[in-house]
Image (cartoon, rainbow, N blue to C red):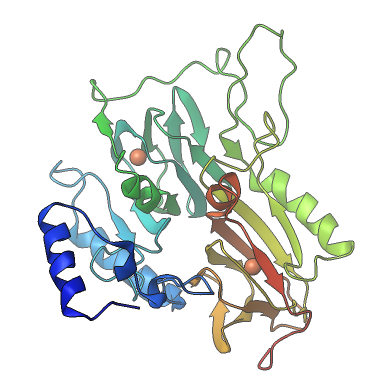
Length: 350
Ligand SMILES: [Fe+2]
Ligand SMILES: [Fe+2]
C-alpha cells in the first residue's frame, strides 16, 4: 500500500537522495501469499532441438578455434532477456563430432552431463577419464578442471545442466582456462573408480574422491526393480543420484533423478518450491502443469516452474516411460525454503 499524501512523497524523495527508502513503499504485490515466479511452463520438442543441432553442426566450426563448443541452450519464454532455462538452472544440448576437443577449464558453476547418443567421447575431470555411454550421468563439481574429447567415429549428443543462474545471482561466477592445451589424464592404475553407486573402502587418512560417473548399466536395474515394488504416488519409481560419501544430493546445488512411470501410470498432483527440468529418455506421456497438458515423447524436454501444480502420466499401455530430471531442491532445502503440498488426486486431462 503506497502512501499518497504530499508530505510522504516529499519524504520519499528526500530519502531517495540520501540512498534510503521507507518500508511503507513496499506494496502488497511484493508480499504474495503464494510464491510467484517469472519462469513459465514450457515443452521443447526433440525435432526442433535435433534440427537446430544439425544446422549448428555444419555452421559452427569448433576446429577453427574461434568457437569453443557447439551448445544450444533452452530459453524459457518467461526469461527471454537472460536466455536462461529457469531462475536457478540452465539446460543445454551439446553436439560433438569425432576428433573435436572442448578446451580444458574450470568454473564456480557445477555441471552435470546426461548422455543421449553416440559413442567414443570422454570427459576428463581432474585427470579422471570417463568414457560416456547412453544414459550415463557424469558430474563436473564446481571448480574442478575438465575437458571433453571425442576419440570415436560417430557424433555424440548430451545434455549439459548447470546451476549458472543461481551462481550468477550470488555474483560469484569465476571461469579459468587451463594453462596447457590439454588436461592430462591419470593412468587407469592411478585413478580411483569414479562411479557413483559404490566406493572403495579406504584408510581413514586418505581423502575419498567424489563420485563423478553414474552408469546407465548400474542405474537401470535398480530403477526397474523399484518400479516393480510400490511406486511413489507423486513420482512413480524415482531414484535420486546421491553422493555416496555424504548421502546428500547429486551436487550441492543440483539434484538429478532418473524416474520410471509404468505403462498407464498416472501420478497424483502436487506442487513444491523447487523447480524441475525433465528430459524424456524413453517413452511418451503427458504432464499437466497448472491445468495445462504438455504431451511429451522421447527426446523432448520440459520445465515445471516452482509452486505450479503438476502430475505425470505414461500414455502407453505397453511401454515404460523414463524421465531424467534436474532439480534445484538442494538449494531450497539448505536454507529451509523447501515446501511441498499435495491434493491427493490426479488432475483432469490425465
Ligand atoms: Fe565447463
Ligand atoms: Fe514434482
